[in-house]
Amino acid sequence: MLHRISHVLLRGLQKIRVTLFFKVPLINHTLKPLFFKTPLVAKGNPQSKLPLFPYFSTSSPRYLLQSMTNTDTNDVEATVRQIMELIDAGADLVRVTVPGVKEVEAIHKIKKNLVEKNKNIPLVADVHFLPEVAEKTAYFVEKVRINPGNFTDKRDYSVSFTENEYQQGFEAMMLCAKSLIDICKKNNTIIRIGVNQGSLCGRIISRYGNTAEALVESALEWIKIAEKYDFHKIVFSIKSSHVKTMMEANLLLYQKMVEMGRVYPFHLGVTEAANEMEGRVKSAIGIGALMLKGLGNTFRVSLTEDPVHEIVFSKLLVTAIQEVNKNKYDSFSNSVLHIHYPEINKEKWWAGVGALVGKWWLTENIKDIKIENQHFAIDEIEKLQNCVLQICHIKKTHTEIIACPSCGRTQYDIQALLKVVKQRFANYPHLKIAVMGCVVNGPGEMADADFGIIGSANEKVAVYKGKERVSDFVSVSEALEILQSIINHSLSLPSVLTDGNDKR
Image (cartoon, rainbow, N blue to C red):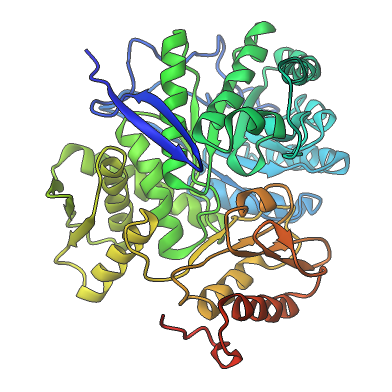
């Protein structure tokens, strides 16, 4: 019998009480994820059967590893080359941005090119704002990712909705979805419902706030829509740059599915995780904790780096999860979490420690974290400790920096800018700075950041203070100077501190 505990979700001024399954492995194996009646075949290669969601047990987990290209989709040759690199690294499926009609033809050429090279792999078309683009790609890709927050609804958060207006908005989205679902039915195409906290629509937020519950309600609407049209090839992802919100929302959605008696597949991920140690550990905490609960069918570790690095770390995370699930490397007493995971591979060590931290963070009030590993020097251990303490909001030792992994919509070198921002603005532990690729999720995901830089076209970027854009679209070098100036002004710091060496 499942042991239930009540857990309070606090977001902003809104307090939401929900019941979550925390103390036992999450997946109830009598409720297996809904399966597709026929195995999904990579389109264009009938001999290659690539089922996207084979069921797995906790004793023999099998997660499908996903990444996303960051090339210009219209550069077919470069995108094909990157997908081939991801295949060689071990990717099971690859997402490609399709921002407009022009890119529909490009991804069709990419698909054809891969088949000709005998490098076929399921492709996910990433679509925002344009339902007609989703419909056009659904004829030939294996999966279409749509975002409920911008499928038909708007992001005007100043509008309040009557009950009738709220329902009309939902019905308009349901009607618009019918054409896409009909095409997906005929072409054996999956729809991924990708709910992102940074792009929830104004209608949902007007009722639920920007909360974990809002993320779940947005997903539940699409279960109603899909089932109304007798369509069940749907996958759900709920993402946030706030790790705990991401974990809570996924657990709550799973619980809602259990109550309905129908469990659909989950894709896991922490968005805007950034790079290096922070990006990997943040992903390991959120994804790893849910994997230890038995949740998830696919996942992506989002890094502002070469996409191949995402697959490399994903494989280490799966292996680390298997090890920490079988052995006792952690203990919790007097509000202190102790972890002794004696792994010699540095990134795998990060992965295992992160997953264990996430597991305890879900249920306990952690006041300190102590990590031991005889294979690493004290400074390396302290660096990892400070990293997890910062992510869990227990102790702040440096600036919190979030960054999207970028994709074909990004038109400037976000990886280079992120490195500069981390070096130049590292020592403001009371600040949160965002580095975002484009306007799709950028303004929303960085809404609670103190400052940020968001990309636009032609290698131009803009500087934000909170939700407000405070500069024109300028070069990266100009943006850095503007950002430094507004930080200095906001904190009343003298300009001599432009090297970021403020130790306060």
